Figure 1 (cartoon, rainbow, N blue to C red):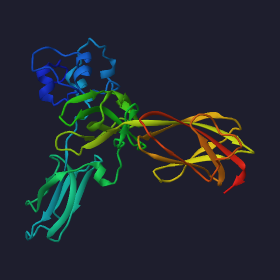
Figure 2 (figure 1 turned 90 degrees about the horizontal axis):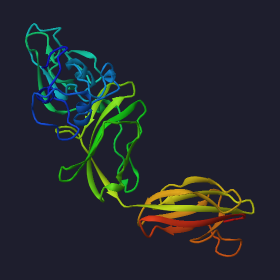
Figure 3 (figure 1 turned 90 degrees about the vertical axis):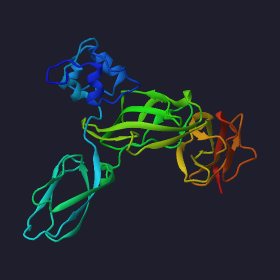
Figure 4 (figure 1 turned 120 degrees about the vertical axis):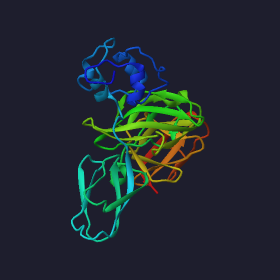
Length: 338
């Protein structure tokens, strides 16, 4: 029953508009438990008092609403025009903005007023219907200059699913779909920049992502990928790794690299012997150029770090020939510069 202190059924969950994590059970009079809600719906189980329920207890109606992820009104973009009505000086309208504040707009001249992002149902015209509004689309706080986390594109097989980092915001309730609309993965987890989902279990191709954005203080602010809302398509590619060993002779140097002739990225200084330096995640077919940041000469091999013999030059070109693991052994000679 949808009233204060009442327990709720599956029929109630559908009427309440809880967002399904996966295909939820059909309408029925069965009372739902915390465990049921976490299994079938987007629920923030850190919210009090919902977090005090054990898995087999039945939460109250108001406690479920308080924990429901994404259960906030929609925001729409409206054009507003002021009519030429005599004696209406001082007329204003109000609306709730994406920040949650009530805004008051007053314009005494008639004509076009502007475009406003309003919470659904919050618009109030104070007298004589002086202002008229026309809906022109869906909007977000994102349209007001805030950058929310978004899926990194492309993603690579064998890695964790990554989002851009936006200080002050986190991602919750991620679901991944294929082009046919089939849900491949869904979670109630909370993430700041990385979802610990190994996308190596997905085939190469295009995917769509549905998720909610919250502030790190726990306030819901936006959702993506739902019908009528902005959506992100992510290309999943075969990943390749280049495992780097690095040697320094005659003082060595500091290694940098670029991918496909992009900007140079510094890796670090040599340690004086052929040591494993780390792994680069790239794409099959990429071209990598290794060099020293101060122009010291460098040489490479696919089996062992070169010695002080021939083969040194200003840079080393390495082509990633296959997905999976690739290996390169490098030596920087600090005695010679280009």
